[in-house]
Structure formats: structure tokens, C-alpha cells
Image 1 (cartoon, rainbow, N blue to C red):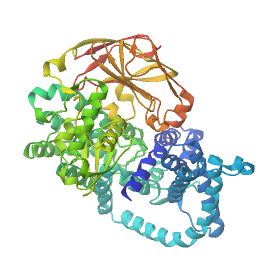
Image 2 (spheres, helix red, strand yellow; image 1 turned 45 degrees about the vertical axis):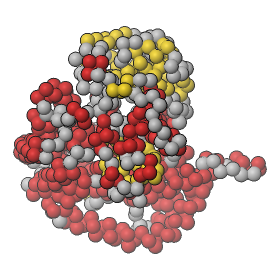
Image 3 (cartoon, rainbow, N blue to C red; image 1 turned 120 degrees about the horizontal axis):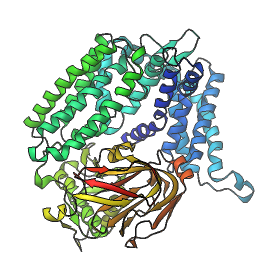
Image 4 (cartoon, rainbow, N blue to C red; image 1 turned 45 degrees about the horizontal axis):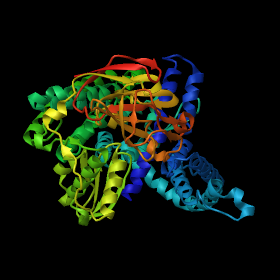
Length: 633
């Protein structure tokens, strides 16, 4: 059930990603901004149709290949359900829940029937074409079920909403607490969806009806914003101040190494409201520290509600949304003052607890706890990591099942208490989360697919001893060629961007190492260096290179492109092949890949320069093969 709910939460990111565009259009169209009703109406086109957008996005998220066929089935499921219920009982309105339920059912039906085969005379209706047909039939049957079941369910939801909305600071504070507590298991999007898009109703002077905290706030509801305002002090001030506390709590000799990273993620939270890069630095280290953070978030929402502060956002509670919605907020200046108070509280609370509990926040790790630097062939390094991951998970006898998502190993174990976190982190884990006594997640990063497959392979072979163990490099070897300058070529034609522009915290925070990003304009990718192909990912979406000077480079085309299973990619090299600058590596069908992936922005990461800072001297649009000069500090 937890995995199922997590999948819903993950799938909600597709439709939620439309909110920034909708909020910008609605705000800029208002009288106090550009006074252009056409622009506001365009934004309303998104906000007013969120249920069907949810149905489409969730269906894609549940589909094993994020297919457009699943998206079509999601839309059909929603239309059949809502129109059928209207005819059954016009008082029934499932709102966003109808979209969520339709998307889940359509996605599951797609996975079951996408490859169904019929006799020759019916073959036209086989495969993916059958999915919309079976979806419409199933949803028609469900109209009669929900016609009976949904009214009492809606009654419970309405009662809960009325209690929360009428409970004042207590209800708002409880929501803030749960919002943060659910982040580790990825279910915060589920509770956010209910509050943001369902709670409360507002009818403006034109007779337009708005549901949910965000929509009501943007439409001018004088009571909306209580569930949103309290996040601004936390995201703009509290968590950036926690970064400052982690910097001063770090060992003096390591402050320079972690300072750049902490500054980067603090600015990200302050400006955009994206806080996961900060929260993941201590989430796995101390439940106490994360619990305090969750409680402080609830207190912040309680205080802002008590002070009568109303503010809102379309994306997140950062400076951009704070300034954008300043004109329609209530007491926004006071909100800034509350934020300064929370900055002080977060600094002293975090600094004290990190010191008192001896937490291994960035810059405080024991030398023996730092990630091992391994040298050897790519296969030897991967096999070594897989060997010690199995050992750290309690050995093969403790492992029931190995699965993985985009960045995490999802493990079914006999006993999670025997996990050796120090060993796992030494061989590549970014964090470990015990879900219960038999389930655990190990955060690895985007290379999790290869490590997961290597672990599975070892377990099938009975976990044999290492044949050729990758060895730990000495400190002197680790620092060889890691200072000075790099001369690399542009891997693809497009816009050269900073790594922070990648819409994925694993890359943007430098978790995988420093680098840069490219927004490609054609699908030709070339080698940026003279060297050797260290690894070609089985799904063809990424290539690892070893430069002649020992620098390891990962070119990861787009985000979540691993799910495409190689569709749209043509690899022109193989592992172990020598390449020169400008040699063709792969060709990508950008049109099809960009349509199926969340982003085509391509991170280029120097994976063995972790802890180093780099400065890219060029910017703007470049062609593949153009020189890029990079300073390493």
C-alpha cells in the first residue's frame, strides 16, 4: 500500500508541474499587474481543468513506459466517469479525486492490456488501441459504484475539510506538520493535493467557482492563503539558516569544501522554495532533527494564521512567489519579519542539536565514514560496490527482493535492523531509510539502475567472493589532476547552463559531482574529451567516459529518460572504445524523447571531482565540439 501511495505521489508531479505557468498567467492578467483578462483566462484554463490534467498525468505516471496511450486513456476515464455521474446524480462532483481515481485506473489498465492480441479480423483493436476501449467500459461500470459509494465518502472529506478550515491555527499547524513528516516517504503530494485543490469553495463576482487553497487565493478569496503563508518563513529563512548552522558546525578544515554546496542549496530554497536538497542532508541522519524541523513548520503555519497573514504561491514558498503575489497578500511585510525570527531559531536549534547529537552533517563526517574512492575498471568498481552493498544490507540471506526507482534501491529484507549504514555510505549510498522492519530504501543517485542490476546478478550467482576488487585510491592519487583547468568540448549543440539549472536535486545540488548542463537543440552528442568509453548505459540514455587525465565524465541525456528503455536513442560507441574530442557518441530523437521525458536538459557531471568547485568560463549557445574552459578549485 505504501508503494502504491508513493506511486500516486510521484505521478502527481506531472500535473503539479503546470502550476507555475498557471499562477504566472493568472497573476499577470490581474488588474494590479498587466490588466489583461486574456492572459488571466489562459491561466484559468489550467486551474479550471486540473482534474482532467491530474487524470492524464497520473495515468502516464502509472504506465510502465509513460506512454501517450495511457494519457489518452486517463482523459477518457475521467470524461466517462464525470459525465456518467452527472447523469446519475448531478449533485455528485468528485473534483480532483475523480481525476486521481481515473488516472490510477487508466494507468493500471494500460499496463495490463497494452499488448493484448486478438484474432486477425479484430487485430486492429488489439494492443494499445484496446486500452481506451476497456477503460471506457470499466469506468462506465464504476459510475454506478461511485454513484452509491461517493456521496458518503465526500461527506467525510467535506467534514474533515470543514474541521480543518474552521480549526484555525490548530488545523493549519497540523497540516504543516504532516506536510513535512510525509516528505521522506513521498506522500506529501497526496495531502497537498487535497488542501491545495479541493478544500474550500469561493465564487467571485463573475460567478466563477474556485476550489482549493491555491486557486481560491489567486482568484481573490479574502480567506485563502492560511495554509500557504506559513511555508514562506521556513523555506526562505528557516532552512537557509539551517545551512548556515551546518556550515559553522562543520570541521574547520572542511568548511571550504562544503561551503559552496551549502550556499547553493540555501539560495535555491530562498529564491525558489525548493527545499528537498537541504532536507535530504539531515533527513536520514537524525529523525530527531527532522522531527524538530517538521514541528517548527507546523508552528510557523500556526503563527501566521494567528497573526492574520495571508499569502500564497503557485509553485513554492520562495522569493519569486513572495514578490509575485505581494500585491494580493495580507500583511506580507509582517510575514518577512516572522521569517527573520525563524532564521534565528533554526540557526541555534540546528547548531545545538548537530553538536549535542554529534550528527554527521556535511563537513562533520569521520574520515573513515567518507565515501570510498575506488580505482579499477568500471566493471570492477561496480562489482565491488554491489558486493559491499549486499554485505551492508545483512548479506544475501537477509535480502528477499531488490527493486529500484530513479534514484533509490527499494529493498525487501528479513530484518532492517542489521543494516550497516556506515558500510553502505562508504560504497556509494547517499542515505538509508528504514520504512519498517522488512522494507528499506537506499538512496544512490541516477546510477542506481546499474548497481541494482549488479546486486541482482550477484545474488543469482550466490554472492561469490570478489574476483578483482576495485582498490581504494590513496589520498595522493585522489588529488592527482584535480586542481587546475579542464579543456573539454561541448558535447551537444545548444545552450550552456549551470548545473543548478537541472530540474533534479541529485544533479543540481552537486550530489553526483560538479559540472554543467546543456539544453540541446539537436540530437547529436559527441565526446567532450580524448579518452575511453567507461560505460554505456543499457537504456542508452547516458554514457560515462574516462578522460586521458583521469577525469570521469557522465553525460546524462535528459531526466527520467531511463524509463524510455532506449527508445529514441542510437548509441554509436561501445564500452572500452577509445574516442577523441568530437567523435560521435550517440544520436537522440529529441522530439520523441522531449515529449516522453520531464526535461531534455542534459547534465554533464565530473563524477570524481566531488568536493571540488568548478568555474565554466563560457555561456550561451554553443555548437558541439566548441571548446569549454573550466577552472577547478
